[in-house]
Length: 318
Image 1: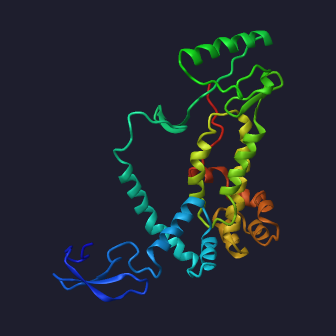
Image 2 (image 1 turned 90 degrees about the horizontal axis):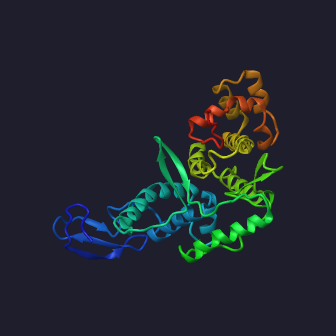
Image 3 (image 1 turned 90 degrees about the vertical axis):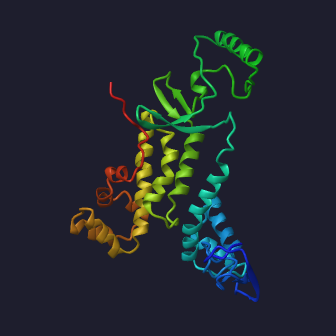
């Protein structure tokens, strides 16, 4: 421990302690008085550092609401407001990220494994997923069984790879999937596997729930890495684009709060006075109001594009 004023390591311990139980010290060189937290990020906070660190850890790891954390610690006899949680997160998160980055530097081996990563393709960042399977189409069931045996043999004997028998089978194209996409109607239609679609929607609902109390730009920042993995996929996902934007409109409508603020925001975005007054005074729920023409005109697609929300379907020119 060093003196925060002269950086000297010579000090004496005083008999009294701070309100949080930390030792009070006196520097022998400059006679400066300080405690164990002086010069740190949490020097003047009213709670112990280990409690604050635990609050920030739960906030980052479990993505809990600010008010939920305040209520959880209130049951344990520790009282603080949700605004204090916001301040602690803003102070500790950059320092925590820098410390993790410093400890991780130089410890990466010669070989490493990833499920997904970003790569630059023709000057644009793309999401690359490690492909671990493939579909082989043949004309008959017998030909499929023959090709299955001929492909599995060199993989297991020569390359010493393990073939997942539970996911490897000979079946009709309508009964199989590849990268969560299947085909139907003799290959003329492409569809997303229902289980993957339900997982996708459940995650979007969790990230866009109306009680998160964070800005829209931060929500889009969290959605971007997940949505980039669905880019360059079939056009069937265009309906999901409209559904995601409606979820964001619903979240923003709830965040605007009362009718006066909603009227001001609609007018600021170019909605006429009459339409803004009708929409702002409507008692309809947030989800139904997200489909209101006045709200849609105020929050058009280019507004979300300017915030960085990626498109699920990117048309490729011929």
